[in-house]
Each structure stands twice: as C-alpha cells, then as structure tokens.
Image 1 (cartoon, one colour):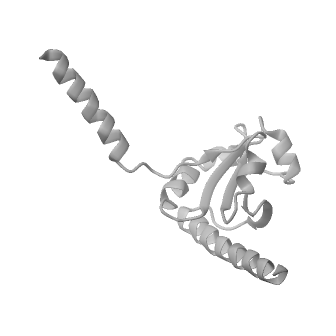
Image 2 (cartoon, rainbow, N blue to C red; image 1 turned 180 degrees about the horizontal axis):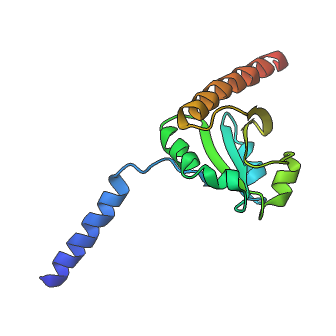
Length: 146
C-alpha cells in the first residue's frame, strides 16, 4: 500500500511537470549548432552574443530569459544566445566585436542588428517587426525565382 502511494505521487508529479506549460527557453547556440539552427526554414533567430566577464552583459541580468518568456507562443521566432568566450568561431563568423550584441537571423543570413533600448518590450517589438520583414522579403525573393 505504501509503495502504491509513492508510485501514485511520483506519477502525479511527472504528469504535472509534463502538462504544465513551460516558459519559452533561450537556446544556447554553439559552433556545432549555430549554422544549422539559424538556417531553419521560415524561422527567425534573435541571438544575444555575450561573454561572462563583460559588465554590460552581466548588467542585463535576466533580461534575455525574460524576453524568451515574453516570446512564448510566437511562431517561427526563436531566442538564442552565444557565449563568445567558448564559441569564438561563431562570433568571428558573424562579426562580433563588442558585447553584448543582438542580431536577428533569417534563413541563415543576418537580417538586422538591434541597437535600441534594453527592455523586454523594445526587444520583443524589434524581434516581431524584423521577423515579419524578413519573412516578407524571403517570400518576395521566392516569388521572383518562380
């Protein structure tokens, strides 16, 4: 009987953890994953490039995670981050020279660089607007090829 209750409790916790919606996550991109991820068809990637020792990156606090949560439910926009101290080839490839740097990629190409206010509302508005522009441009380019 005691084991049945334990089993039921564990099962209940497992079901709760599966059924409760989780917050959108910020996906860590590495040299092994970066190129493939940003090439995902019809998906915009808004990526933060930082290093752990940068005071400006530290001052962001939970901003990027908060943005990930705020972007939950937005189709075809992913929030990513690259630690340039361990993913130097990625940062060199996309021309990162200062930290933090925020760039939006679409269909494998850099589409826009963010240089606005550092708050969730501004970052979200930028990501939504630029992702829409990128999708429209991609559609126009596709239509021209046909």
